[in-house]
Image 1: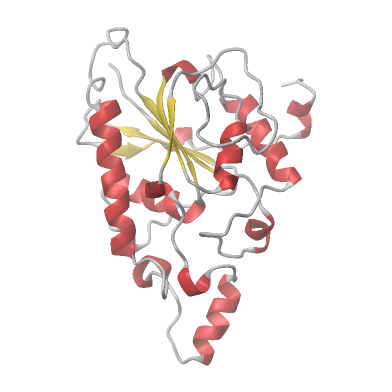
Image 2 (image 1 turned 45 degrees about the vertical axis):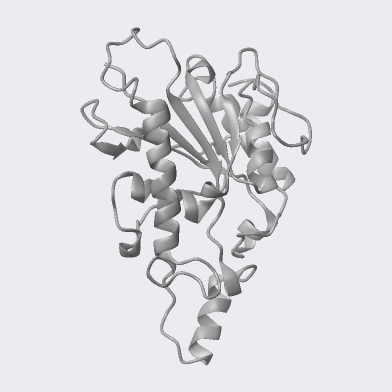
Length: 253
């Protein structure tokens, strides 16, 4: 039976992700190592016999931030559709590609950190202690002059409904080989928003803290139990992050 999937990919390493600075609206580029790791991830996980099969992709959602767009450029999907932005560098080549449309959407941009943009958790803790405030929990508190958990929930729930109605409903539970249109979805975005997306995918209240991690350049997979649209699940066996850079750089793996 056919069971569609959503692949979530966090953008590659940036200078701010390296030092723990909260990066929401700021447009910070990938580091050279970040680009290298994303290329390695693409070679490891993208292909006709790999986790992400380009021809099976129906749609690609991308954050408006350049670091997410650059990550998509480096995955080697063989994009046949023109990217709705001017390329931020060379595009990773691929033998076979995808006809999936690329949609840049605010729905999957990073959490708006408001007053906490560009500063670390340690700095936030020190400032809150100085101000006599309790320990910060983004999942419960949101961000001052930024977004609340309820706002995040509302925009992600709308996106999830869009994914299911447009790309999954027609295919799920159908006999293998009977679905001619692609049905998998790829989302390239950011750490906090993708963790929240995964939580909402399985109907978890993000205010309870999803207790999920997705490192820079990490890949996760969301799907369904029992081939049923009303039984969303996180596919633990489909969560990967490529850490093997040197070996794949010269094509040995």
